[in-house]
Length: 193
Image (cartoon, rainbow, N blue to C red; front, side):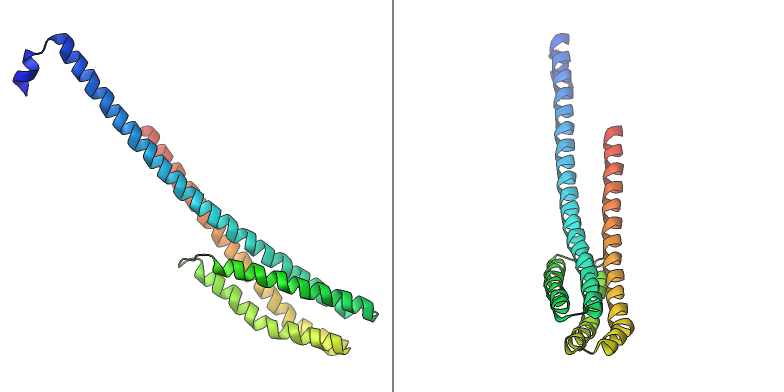
């Protein structure tokens, strides 16, 4: 190899050296671009999944509040028309709540997300019989028992559900912050090399 280089003239040696240097720089640039493309793909996947999970969780929270509002409206209804209107609002909110929860539960999970989803599911399952009992009592006209059941059982359950959903949303925010921090570290490392 050294004999080969000694036989080359200076101009050819410089050309070969610079050509090799340019090829090395092109290889490094290509690998860096591929790495950043991979990082962007990973970041986008985490961000899209996290945003979808937060969107469904937010819808669950909103519909939870609508359920509470409609039960209170049914409790305060003075006539059958107001009672029926609030009942229809409750049923529509319950359907939207169910769809949002099903979409949330159908998303892929990991070890960090699963306990939060389990908490949301458990509070939902524990609260549903109480809310149904409150609605049944209100439709029968027993406002006193309905109010008692709402305050003692349904409302605490709905509030527990809200806290479970908020815990899931906080966990998703932490995950997104972690991914952003990792991307920033990787970007800094790439700039220094």
